[in-house]
Structure formats: structure tokens, C-alpha cells
Length: 310
Image (tube, rainbow, N blue to C red; front, side, top):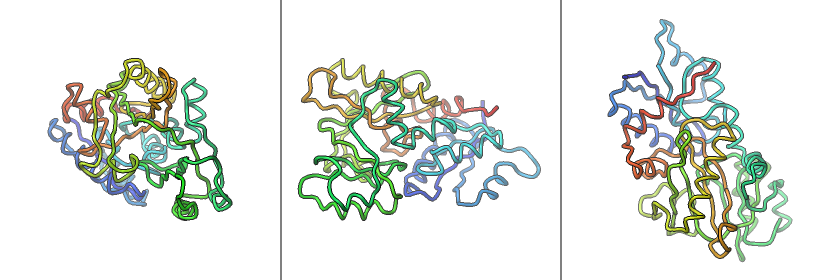
């Protein structure tokens, strides 16, 4: 069935450029699927957005495809606007989006589910100036950013003052986690199905923003060449997290596996992305393609599984 779809993209978070790439790619896939598509670059003007989605003469879109990334786009804010307007939209709702975007809160949820997470604490950013909050190596993260924006691995010899200064743009609190050595894994979930496990092998020091969005920097291995028990537990945990947080449509869970530990004991959950990247290099579409789902079919599946506000 042909639908009129508005693709929201852009925004004003540090992930604006990635969102624009995602949005354009999704719009093209929707057009290939036979849908009428309108692209909308979201600015910090709520009235303009509302007027665009609900024209004076009526006849707004059948569904909104949310291709925004970062704060205000995937943290429950834009979802709340669309709920109030009673406009169907893709991906997760207000609560799931808010919990997943808040890394400390998501960690509490994962632990309550029995999913293993890295040892971690939330501290005032300024306290980094007083010294290491835990033995090195450890990871410093903004509490509410995506795409590895602002993430630093602090190793022996690194300048802690430089890390503290870099974090200043992202608020007064940071999450500090024990660095888990080993292998980077990710699992896409579509509805009630964990699709696959991909292993990521960046040629940089870690899977940072550059490694995620620069062609050729990271090798994607799908299915991940890991023991079957680890593979299946990663899929199980991703689906458990998706369902327990109340996610909808497509999500992606990132994990680390310390392969020096016996069995599955080295597996930890890092975070759940309610709106994973949809660029040509992105992992969730790559897993869907591996599973036999074309780009246009994935786009149509996502609008078919849009949330309908009550």
C-alpha cells in the first residue's frame, strides 16, 4: 500500500550530519518502495514542525519516519510531540527512547534484567581534574549522546585534563566504565527477532565516531566468528533488552566480549540504540540485507510497524 511519508532528519545535535545522510538514504529507499516521500530538515522551531505535519487544510502524512539522531531526536522529545499530534511514527516510543538514551538509567535496567554490564559510576565531570576515578584503562562517556560522540578511552599516559575539557560540551556529569578488552559486537532487532551478530574490527584504536562513519576504517564480520554460545547469548540479550524497555520496530544493541574469559562470562552489554544509524555504512541495515531483506523492503517494514499513538 502506497503511503505519504515525512522523513524527519537533521536536527541540531552533534549527530546532525549523520542524520541528514540517514534521512536521505531512507527517503530514497521509501521511494523505491513506491511511497510518496517528503523530506524535512528539523530546526529548533516547534511551531514550524507542527504546521508542516498538520497543514491548515488537513491531509497530513500517513506516517513519520524518524531519521533524527542524538538529543531531542531519539531521547523521547520528538516522540512526545508526535504522540500529542497523534501522528504515527517509526521506532520506539517516549519511555523506551528516554531510558535507552540515558546511559546510567539504561545500565540500571539491563542489570535488573540480569544482563551483565561493565563496572561503572556516574561522576561530576570536574572531578576528573582530581585524578582517576578508577584504575586505567577506563571509558569516559557523556550520559546522553549517541554515535560514540564524546567517548574517550583513558589509558596509561593519557592526559586526563584533555578528556575533562573535551567533555565540557556535554554537561556536568559523565559515565565512567571499566574498559572491557576483547571484541566489539552488535545485534539488530526487528520487532520480535534478533537478526544477527556482527563483529566490528576498527583499524583505529576503538570503534569511535570516525570508525563508524568513515568508509574502510572498520571491518564488519557477519555473522560474527565467535563461539555459538556467545553468539546466541548476544542475540538473546539484545532481544530481552528490546522487549523489556518496550522498544518498537528496529533497534540495535552493542556489546563487548572479553574473549580471554571462559565461555560467555566475558560478554557485557554496552547500550541499546532505539534509532540505529541508517547510513550506507550502518550496521542494522547491513544485518537486514544479510538476512535477505532489501533496503526498500526494510523501509516499508519500518513504516508498516510504525507506532500509532492512542
